Length: 160
Image 1: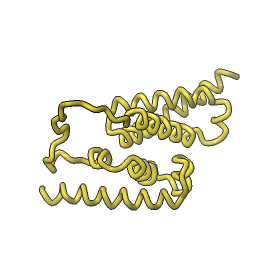
Image 2: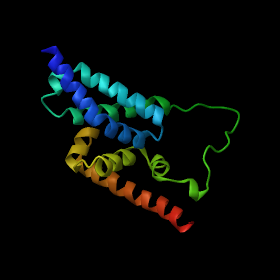
Image 3: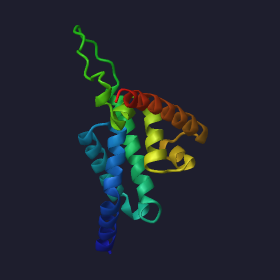
């Protein structure tokens, strides 16, 4: 019986890992961090596979990725004071801006809503459940995120 559960998980992993990795990459803007998030989320999904497999394992894993991303963001956002002012890490050259860089400039919740709604094609209700917020919040974050992305990407097109 265990081999059947393992085979089901392997099939789930094979069919969904690339899409989840793409979504995690869009959330983080960093391929290595995205791989870590997906790996940890898949490990947690596997650990609970007997309960998760009968429901919607992709939704469970997506929610785990978002929660792990939020945890990373919270740990990282602590302010570190230094005497030296860092040099700018990004270029103002509009030619270097692409969708992932534009997404990285959005506030965290707006970025999450845009990726879940428009890349993973989740409904507003599914996005709200995944993020643990209300549907109205999803609508507001997604609208603001789309508006900001439009402005960021229109600036790139006008310089071509």
